[in-house]
Image (cartoon, helix red, strand yellow):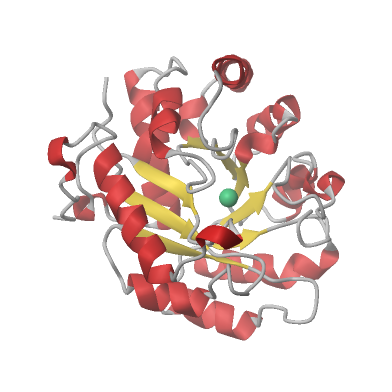
Length: 291
Ligand SMILES: [Zn+2]
């Protein structure tokens, strides 16, 4: 069964290879092309924990996407190092509706998610009712400290900030069982299934990931309420990820929630503005119209 709509709640507009470095506008065009090709109706774009030649600033991303109905922006915070995010500006962008959520990168940026310094961030999220997305588990960069990205630490903040909704990205890979417990225990914690491979799956690894996810789903009981579809494009190709979504044995109702309903609620995306491709291939690759 194809869900009514499909929201990819985890994509990036960074360059990941110096050899293929290109302007942000070209990455945006590529994103919308791939979405049209794969029947993805909306994408949540996450900005980085750094700004450099390969990682555009949140200001640039907001300007380039300029309220396009096909995309929502979540602001990645720079929390360590010299150029930290200015929380006054972050709050203004959230208040003005340019940004619909906050992304934190514990591990990459050397801090654990239960660091007391983050209280100011969580207060902003609670005040404006925007979700806080958190990188959990394995990291793409060898310079990251993976212990700080362990999913079990999310339990600390879920308890301390019951008014904030948290999203664990990547299901804490490879600590799936710990992530399942944090989800099962805390109603204010959600998760996306993004980034569990790089590029295309190998046959064995796809089976491995699908098994782990099914184990989590069994443990959680009702996964439809807390899991969301996300890919981690362009690190992950969209098509094999949509295929994975369909291998997880969700009921029809759960699939609709995972594919788009929960993301629409969390990021306040109006379903009426979405195309209705639901991940079905669109012959000729016609772009979602947003009507
Ligand atoms: Zn990502």
